[in-house]
Length: 192
Image (tube, rainbow, N blue to C red; front, side, top):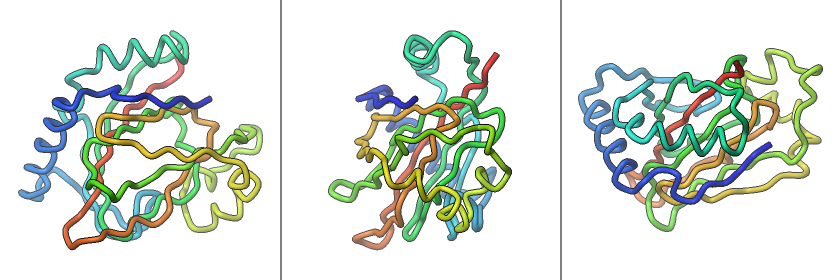
């Protein structure tokens, strides 16, 4: 199951989250860089449970539980900067990330970074560690899933939530001007 949300995060909260995160990135402390992960093949920054990302958590949690059910418990938020040439290879989320909401908190006008969600859920009986790895080999694993999908273009504050069995990916991000980037915050729930 997946669902699109227009303005699930207020513009004020999105801007606050972005600026709080960028202060950390500019200091290059308490962030780590990821190489060859599902996020990117290039240097990127990420941070968990940034307080600014949790500011509207109560209202977000109510909306998500209303649509997906009360059997989910919020676990954490995670924020990531996608630089030029980032790619999100096809994958399903790791165990314990049973429900994920991805929200755009910063994007450059006229250069969106669409996300694709398969309309064919992964049969969880077929799940292997490789399905969650987000490696280039996942293009082979998810061939049938990538033939039938929906694409979402999110503006700042918009998000898409999906259950763990939904394969998703992004194509390569190409900036139009030096320094452009895209920032997402992810909210995760587990089944209780």
